[in-house]
Length: 126
Image (cartoon, rainbow, N blue to C red):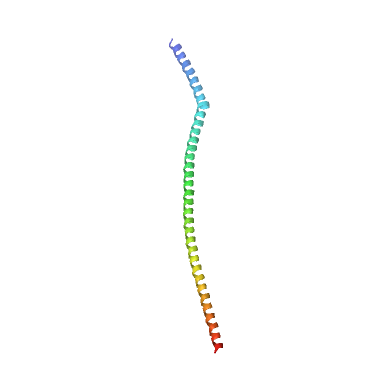
């Protein structure tokens, strides 16, 4: 009876060992690769979401920088236009002064010519 129970127990242990080996084989061949693939997919997804966040941040920074450049360019252009207006006004004022001076010189020349003509005519009268 003891030997019979011992044999049954060993037989049961052998069956359980076989079943355990089968379970380990299933785990090693089916479950472990699936878990590894899922872990890799999780890492890839985390990397994707992180890259997507960084892309959005960098894109927003790029848009902000381009906006800043445009605003700066517009301000500089406004300053340049104001400077050009000032220069144009200065040139117009100079032109007006020079024109006045030319007119004054023409008047003086006419006066001098008139005086010269009068002086010539007065010489002939005597």
